Every structure is written in C-alpha cells, then in structure tokens.
Length: 108
Image (cartoon, rainbow, N blue to C red; front, side, top):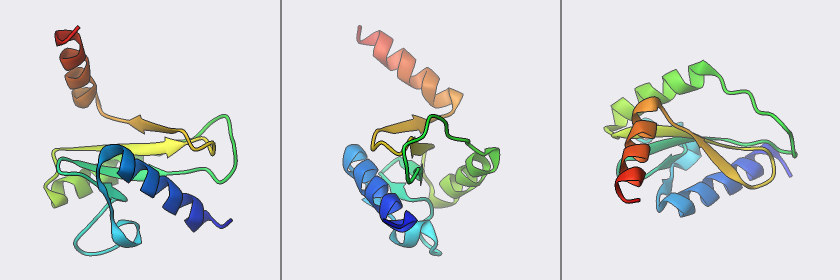
C-alpha cells in the first residue's frame, strides 16, 4: 500500500471520529487547508506506514497549521498522528488543554 492510501485511511478515520470533513487533495487547494475540518477545528494528519515506537513532530508543522487555522477562520487546530497501528492521538496547544481540563473537572 502506498503512502497516500495510509494517509487517506487516517483522514477518513479522523473525520468520522470528529464528525468532520476531509479536505480535498490534503488541503492543497486555495480554499481548504489542512486535512480535516470541523465547524471549529482544523486538523493536520500525520501517519506512519508501518508500526513504530516513536514519531517526530516538527515545530514548523504546528506553525503552518496555526497560520492555516487563522486563514480558514477556525477557532482551534490539532495535529492528528498515529504509530502505524490505526490508533490516533492528537497534539493540541496549552489553551485547548486548559479548556478540556476545566470542562472535564467542572462536570466531575
């Protein structure tokens, strides 16, 4: 299976999980950036083509995603990634983490 197939599967999986839409051509259009969009979020997906124990996250990915988030008028953004095993994880900024903790703890 080629890299595009793995990426496509991950984008579809994350879009379904978040009730979002996959951006055509992995966001390489003038109108839609990133890989998956919801009403409030823009998600950039990174996948491994074979099982691995570590993944490197580049700061430039986060910086570019922040710019794309702003240009698309989204409130938040995240990087979705996997270790080649089909289980997705997300990188969010400290503002979103604080929001999640405050809202979870309010309801506990």
